[in-house]
Amino acid sequence: MAKNNSPKVQAARRFAEEFDVEQVIVLAVSYRHGTVEYASYGETAVLCRHARRLADKAYDAVMEELARG
Image 1 (cartoon, helix red, strand yellow):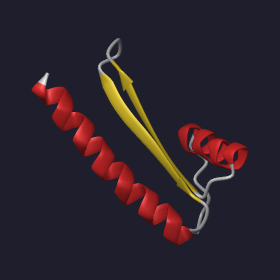
Image 2 (spheres, helix red, strand yellow):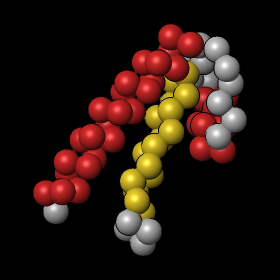
Image 3 (tube, one colour):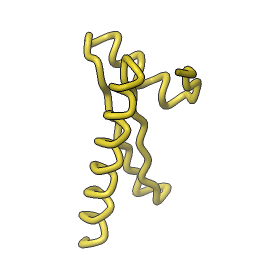
Image 4 (cartoon, helix red, strand yellow):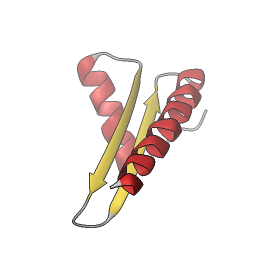
């Protein structure tokens, strides 16, 4: 598996290392910028895919909640 060098994924990787966890999902909401973003990290290819699926679902849930106001 290729290593993702995106700054947000690297921040998630550092979090995983710091707190000794195998998966990390970061959700970022900025009302100031009008954005919702996420990054995910998994220690292995399988965990990475799983983290991405969880992040997709979490992102969708956040977007639904924001749409409700």
